[in-house]
Image 1 (cartoon, helix red, strand yellow):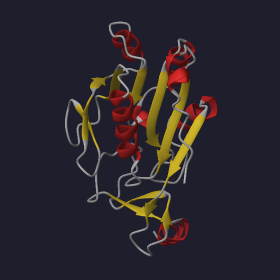
Image 2 (cartoon, helix red, strand yellow; image 1 turned 90 degrees about the horizontal axis):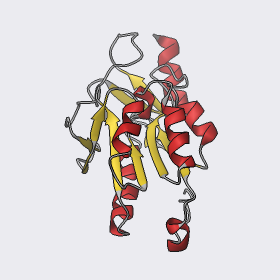
Image 3 (spheres, one colour; image 1 turned 90 degrees about the vertical axis):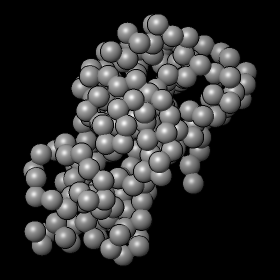
Length: 198
C-alpha cells in the first residue's frame, strides 16, 4: 500500500510544485502507475506533458507504453534539458517522465527547477540495475522528492516479493533494453543465490 499525494482541488490550483518518484524493479508496474496518475490529472482538466528518453524504443517511439500495453502520448528527448525547452512551449502543470534512470545527471536539476516553478513532477524509473546497484540519477531524484512509491513485482522463481531485475544474458553493459527475453523479476534470495552461482 502506498500513499498518493493529496489531490485536493484547492491544492492543485495553488502554485506549489512537488516531485513524485515511482520506482521498483522490472515488471513492477511503474509505467502503469505513471500512466494512471497522468490520466487522473487529465480527467481533472489539468494540462499534462509526458517525456521519455529517446533511447527507449521498445514498444513505441512516441508513446510511453506499459508491459500491459496501456499507452499515453509522450515526447522522446535525448537530453534532460530538452524537457525545459518543451515545457516553455506548453501550459502544462503536470509533467510525467518515464525511464528516468536513462537520463543524464541534469535530470535532477530539471525536475527541481520545474517543481520550484509550481509544476507537479511524476517520475518513474528503475531504482536498481541488473547488478542490484543504484541506477543512474534515481537515488538523487528520490532524495529531492516529496513522495516516493516503491512498487514490487512477483519473483518468477519462488513467487515472493521481487525488487530485483535479473538479467538472463551475459552482457555486462549497464543499459541493455529488453523484456522477458532479457530480464526476470527476482526476490532478494533468488537474485543473490543465482548471482553467486554465476
